[in-house]
Structures are given as C-alpha cells and as structure tokens.
Image (cartoon, rainbow, N blue to C red; front, side, top):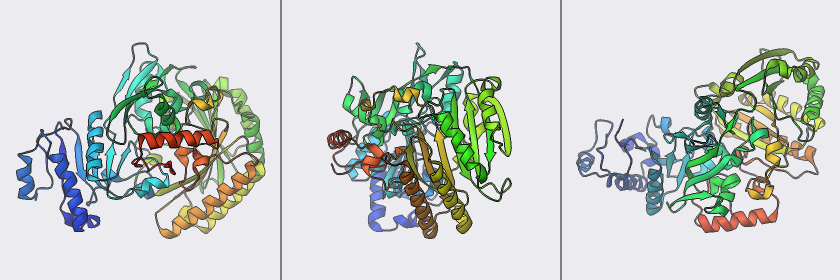
Length: 525
C-alpha cells in the first residue's frame, strides 16, 4: 500500500486508555500526526466518528508513503506490540512503522513535544527487564527499513536499521559475501551490534559491533546525525557496546567479507546424559584452551529437558565447522570418543545455519513472539568450572521437576572463536568484555504469572551466583544483550572507572533527559 495509514479504534476497545487523561493524550498524539499528512489516510474500522472523517480532508503529511500509525491497546493490536518475551512489552499507546529514515526523527520530535516516552525496536527479541518499563509510550518499529546496498568495492554494505540476519545473509550470499551476524536468523543486525554482538564468524571478523563503519543516528532531541571515527567519534565509541542508550540507528555502513572457507558449514548435534557431564566439559575446556578455539570451530552446548530422549535433562552439543565433513573429522572423532547417545549431522549453506541447526529463522518456533516470558542470567567466563557445572545441572533438574511451568527453560554454554575479537583494542569501543572466552546464561522460559516470575528469579539468581563463585577471582561480567536487568553498570559496561566516567559524560551530552532508558540504562549522570 502506498498510503500513510492511521488505524483508530474506539475507546471501548482498549481498557488501559479509558481514563480521560489517557484518551486525551492518545488523541493529541494522533492529531499531531494527522495534522501534517499530505497523503490521504485509510481509517478503520468503518464506524469512524464524523470529526475524524472531516479531519481526513484537511490532512497534509511529513511522512513518507507507506508509513503506518496505529493506536495501540485495542483488541488485535498484539500484531504490532508483541515481543519475543511477553514481560518486555511495556505499555505503548501508539505504534509507528516508518518506511523512511526521516520519519523516525519526526516521531521523536513530536513525542518530545507532547512529553511521551518512545522506544525504537527492530525484531523485538530483546528481553532485558527495562524494556517492560515504558508506560503510555510511542513504539517506533524499524521493520520496514530493510535496504541492503553493497558497495562497488565489495567491502561494505549500507543497511537499513531494520535489516535482520536471514535477510542479510541471503542477500550477501548471492555475491559470495558474508558478515558478522548473530546465530538467530530472525534477530536484527543493528540491535545486537549496539550491545556487542556475538556470532559464529567472530574469530574471523570480530564482534558485530566491530563491523560498524558509520551510522545514521536519530538522537534524543530528534536530530539526524552521522556517527563514525571521523564524525562524532566519541559517540561512535559509545554506540559500539552501549548504543541503546544514545540513539536510534536508522541506517549504517557495515563491513562485509568474502567467505573464508566457502559457503558451506558442517553442523553436528550430539546428545549427552548427566553421567557424561565431566568428560564433556573436560573436552570443551581442552578445545577452547584459554581462548584458542580454532577460527573454523564453534562449540555451543544447551542443557535442557528432552523427555523423548531421557527422563533426566540432557546436554545438546552443537558443533560447527567452516569446511567439509571430511575436514572436520579430527574434531568429530574426539567428540565421538566421548560416547554421545544420539548423533545427527549435515552440511549446508551458511545462510541456512539458523534454521537448520536451531529452528531460529523467521517463522521458526524459536523466534515466535508473544508466547512466553523469557529471562536470562548471563555471565562471561574464561573456562568451565566442572564442579560448578555439576551444581548447575542439579539446580536445573530440581527446577524442572518442582516447577513444571519452567520445563522449557534451558542453560546456554556458548564458545565462539575469539581471535578477531581480541585483536581489537579494548579501549577503542564501549564494549568492555573482550577478555571473556565463554558466555553462559541460565535462561528461563514460562507463561507469565507472579508465581512463575518468582520461581524463575529464584532459580536464575541462584544459578548466576553459582557461576560467579565458580569463576572467582574473575570479576562478574554480564553480556548486555542477554542481561536480566538487575546487574550493576560495572557488570554490564565494564569495571574500569574511566569507562563509566566516559559513558556518563557522553550520556549527559547526548541524552540529558534520559530518553533512551529502556535497555540497561546508564544512570547517575
């Protein structure tokens, strides 16, 4: 459709908006938007008040064609507001889905004029608790900003702020190119990159944050600026690791690369029972070898319940190798020698890795929104403490046995190659945890209720404490994109005093009113 769309629903359809003040505020928002429309609006449903019909004839527009505006909190609105974690949805009155970058700045300026909070999202997979604290807000959905323009030299691409992994990998594969992305195909590029961004190719290309060359950013006051090493360099530093606190990325230039080993990847899945825990993690420690995991290898283990395989929780070991099955055979044999109880393997194009190995592409169950609440309790490690992992197993088994509502929860043990990550000067970006070789997270999943939240927090915090104690004297580092929301700023953004001082100074400069406060907010500034 080539029209700007305003979808207006009667007040009886959204209970949260029935107060006179709430309704007046929402109507004021709509009036601000519609007062400038040039393009005719399509109003639904059919029982629109005559006053709105009269307004339609007087509307002019600053918005690009195809941009949409929705009043939220009506029956059926979850298509526009639901997120991967139901606890992170917050409360929004208006949803805007722009089709061009300038509309994002327009929304921010109008929200500021009216005094409404705003939050920009792409695919909606963030789960940090602060996301659920927005009230009577404006949700800016970047999903329509999905352009991918490859530079003539083949070394970079200009990407829209709504580009996600499946889309990017598919487009790049046509040119025999690849980029640093996360492991889930349904998740955006810009969002995870702003918090660091782990991925399979980071041994070659570094973190997703390291892939940014320049960004078009809408700041807290609605200004549109370019951010790079040569333009607003301090802000560019902050955006790469703490970017959700500083602006909305509407477009960005991103590094792309030739495939180092061809487009195919070998993936094998091995299942291990609890009595094999010690030999499994001894193998993984040997493979990871203090951050020396080979570039071609990724080792990702998940502890979860799989009743069709075992009555007790099992470890699912996902092994990835950039190359052929024959080339991977020395590594595979080491795993087979451990005696896994179930084995599957295949080679396929890397662009399919999310779907083929995790069922985590667009339309797959792992990516489904609005079904359950997900919370994570992450920590970065140098090596696996095997005694701690035994305690974690016992805790997880107790949780799923005594609290069946949490039975689909899992524990992530992620090891990615670190060569290119550690080649970057740690002081050159706001991302602070380049010394961590392993990422673990106790990840709870459940239907939202007070009892389930209490149980998830009890077990999640206990697991986190076990990991912390097992890692000492190493300091507790929490990966921003997985953070629960109850961590300290030092744990998320770095323990060096100069880092927090710099972040706070930049926060005072670029966002003095704390407009960007819904993702691990930088406070005390």
